[in-house]
Amino acid sequence: MKTWVLAVTILAGSCVNGAASAQDVSDKSVATVTGETTNADDADRQVIAQLKAQGSDITKPTDVIFYLYFHTQGQAETLRAQIASMGFTVTIQPNDNPPAWALVANKTLVPNEDTILSLSHTFTTLAASQSGFYDGWEAALVK
Image (cartoon, rainbow, N blue to C red; front, side, top):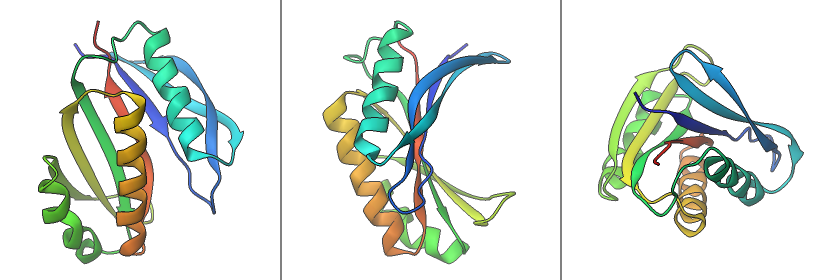
């Protein structure tokens, strides 16, 4: 059984959610981000802190999943090869809520601040290049 911490980034302009809190959801421990902040980097830092607070060793590799959303499947498909060339397993699937398509990028990596912030910036830029948005990441806890 894996335990996950989720970083939810809601992009409306530059607004994202802020302080992380944990709750049990079936067999996952999920951290969501609450409270407004205007700095996505701070939200990422807060989720990394939540990983540490839940006992995760952020110096060890773990499964990390990033979420990007697009209005069309074609927009998502345009980025598939580029993200896959970065070592990610990429799936593109219909989304129940608009926007209609999710690109999910999964990779085993060390979820430290430098890595996460760099990837969040990259995914924000890539998603915007196709009129989509980057919605955040989640990581499995590693003891």
